[in-house]
Image (spheres, rainbow, N blue to C red):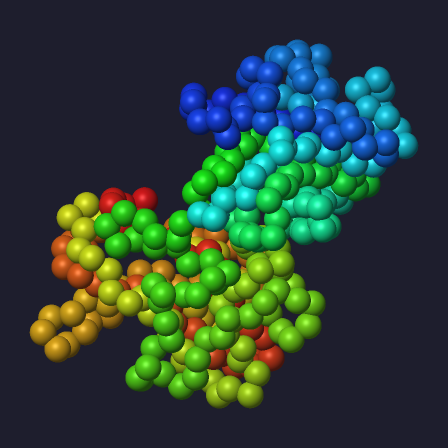
Length: 352
């Protein structure tokens, strides 16, 4: 029987960066600190402690060197009755250009607990991002800090709430206080996370039967209960209820520049019933007034009620002239389910 529950935060060095907002914990941090709340445990800094690695042999090999922070409810490294560990930023000043924080995280174990990012200001606390339960390996997240002209100063908190079993990890926190999280990329590429007005893609006007809708993550109304971006944001949803088998809805880009090196498309998708239908990704090439669609990727069937990640290479033979990307949902024989898409990224500078 397990007598202790362990929560781990590890920081590794992927590369060196001189920005003041970048923290890898190889040297003492000037930007992030243990919160001195009475009911919070303290993160402990360790450097390549072989005893700890023997205790936790399942950690990824590339995270077994460098500095890291460690928290446990058993032994001297933590406190048995303290169920959370909080990392707080330095005092930050609100920027009229917006701010952006990014980091890598890992949550292992179905009951590992909850990891949250919060903004604390004089008027209260805002929850900006949340993840709960196992996340299947390392994940990268970028979170925009909302602009509030009435708030001059604020702090960010990364708080881990202890669950009944599992582990958590963080890596390479990068905070830019004077730059918003951009949704535009080089050479006409783009990121669509459905949190702001979508300008890079739209519902197809002709040739389909109904439209995709942008939906906020909730526990009701169909679709997944959480989005990919923050867990509480928005995603693109196709509801099949009341639709006939074979009916389609397409979501298409607004014109993408040619790329002599090909391109890379990535996205998350959700299909919650076995016969709900098919999700297809196509590239549209135009010759004169005629558009030709070539299927690049498709998937059908139940995906275990979880978001899945997909990545598709577009060879330079298909991107040598301007083109478009189109997502098409086709209704199957079971019209009681739903299909969803989130965090579409097109890098128009080379194949995956």
